[in-house]
Image 1 (cartoon, rainbow, N blue to C red):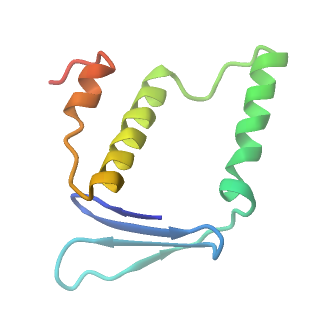
Image 2 (image 1 turned 90 degrees about the vertical axis):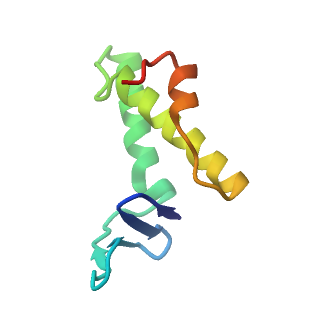
Length: 103
């Protein structure tokens, strides 16, 4: 996975268990982030399955709310569009479609 942002870049390979971050700027160094997770989606599937099971069988509240879900969805849709078009994406239309007012 390779994500370029306005402040830098993130490169991750969960199979090799490596994450690297580099801020934009001359003389900035690549930072290696330790990764201890393994398995499907870096171990995230097990966590998500356990939380979903607890919410369904034990009525446990979720650890994230609707705002986090909408932010995640908008981010994923924008990343998909950027990958498909090879362009920087304006996320304002996604927020508008989600019914979130843009300030």
